[in-house]
Amino acid sequence: MAPCPLQPTTLSALARPAGAALHRSFSTSAQNNAKVAVLGASGGIGQPLALLLKNSPLVSRLTLYDIAHTPGVAADLSHIETRATVKGYLGPEQLPDCLKGCDVVVIPAGVPRKPGMTRNDLFNTNASIVATLTAACAQHCPEAMICVISNPVNSTIPIATEVFKKHGAYDPNKIFGVTTLDIVRANTFIAELKGLDPARVNVPVIGGHAGKTIIPLISQCTPKVDLPQDQLTAVTGRIQEAGTEVVKAKAGAGSATLSMAYAGARFVFSLVDAMNGKEGVVECSFVKSQEADCAYFSTPLLLGKKGIEKNLGIGKISPSEEKMIAEAIPELKASIKKGEEFVKNMK
Ligand SMILES: NC(=O)c1ccc[n+]([C@@H]2O[C@H](COP(=O)([O-])OP(=O)(O)OC[C@H]3O[C@@H](n4cnc5c(N)ncnc54)[C@H](O)[C@@H]3O)[C@@H](O)[C@H]2O)c1
Image (tube, rainbow, N blue to C red; front, side, top):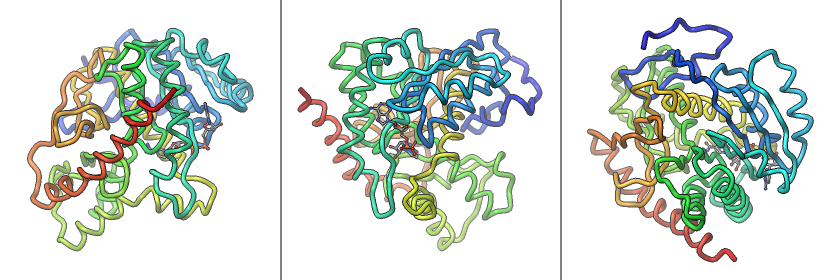
């Protein structure tokens, strides 16, 4: 497929895949008809994410669900002069209609962190929100790709999985924990350090999505970068704590929303491109995995028409990256177990 020139109005840069030998353009496929739902669409992430999706030629129908404000958000977005139709759905009784016929569901519903909180502190509130929403997905759009943004991702993906299993609709290739913001941050910070164009930098980030479980593979960065040990340690720590950097700067007004919306849109566009038949689309995501010593792990994934086509695995890494993986496993296992037990104990 010939790459088409980047159109400023299509936000094509958002479709940048994570892999090295990949094209950056949108698919020219005729099937640019993705039906996408955003659950939690009125929130800090949901609104700008819905805006980016509405602005994409890949999306033909955008359905927006929340427990508050969706009529207003939908009316506002629907005036934008792009093809996607927009409809708002408010409250649980309207959720089934929001989901019917969807190809992709993105879930940023739930409470964000305040200063001093870890992502795990959000578990009590967000676990039941994600369980309820994914149960509705399993019933009303069992074939859709499910992209969970709600934290703690290290637990919400096991929750989504167990809920889909309960409904007999589980497909491990279609449930994704959105960790793209970690990759976006790694690319930006490394580019800053080395004076590179961030759009040309690609750092895979593996593991999970919380503190030490976020493992940037700077040894695999393209272009190749050489950093002295002190800079390597500092930038790795900054990538791991970048979410907290934003939480602190927002001083009680929430966590990353705009950069998260960008990252969520990038992930959805990559997924839709791959569903449309574009080849070589790679993104990292926290998924069911056999690549490490725990049941879920983020690694680069080759995406295809039916979700994950191939897990590309961890690849060749440095001894310090190997150590980071070993140190992350106990925390990952505990978060995964917590998610699984939550669903087991649900009435
Ligand atoms: N994966 C990541 O990299 C990443 C990055 C940043 C934030 N997050 C997470 O994303 C989530 C949302 O963050 P935010 O800043 O948009 O929060 P927010 O409070 O601004 O928005 C959350 C929205 O969810 C809605 N909501 C709550 N309960 C719901 C339910 N049962 N059904 C549908 N909608 C419901 C709220 O009404 C609100 O509109 C948080 O859990 C946050 O930790 C994840």
